Amino acid sequence: MKRQQGFTLIELVVVIIILGILAVTAAPKFINLQKDARVATLSGVEGALKGGNALVYSKAAIQGQENEATGSVDIDGNGTNVVTAYGYAKDAAALVAILEDATTSSAADATWLVEGQGPFLIYDKNTSNNECAVEYTAPTAPGAAPQYDIKDTKC
Image (tube, rainbow, N blue to C red):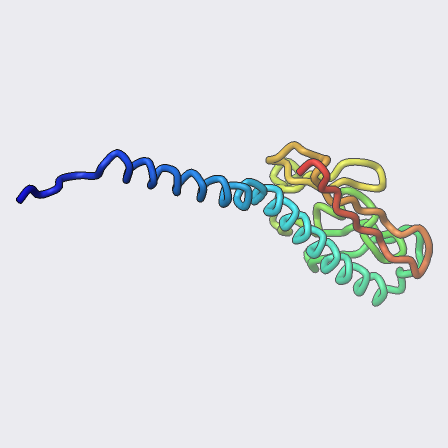
């Protein structure tokens, strides 16, 4: 009686075909994960801006500045002032202050870049892709809310 050793050529071909079929069906599910991760990060930034801006508005309302076209609010009690428009963040420095830790010493240390004069584009400085960003528009009238829009067409 002979003992069989190893695999036959047919067995190897069948295994390779099965692995090929699995790769063809599974690969597309994993290819777009980078874009999904970037869009999820942008959603997180949008949420951070909304939450931070709500706190800025609360402080502005306490100081009676919610109806003023230009104001200033100390966001951390340590003299970190942000410029406001109708109680919400108005300029790029205010947006960076909301997103970054108050201990960040300069804009060069910031993770997020803010471009524009309004509307502003906020994007990760490590990606250098301002087409994968959150667009922020400050309010232009009392009682109006800021506008947030995720630009993810080229993430």
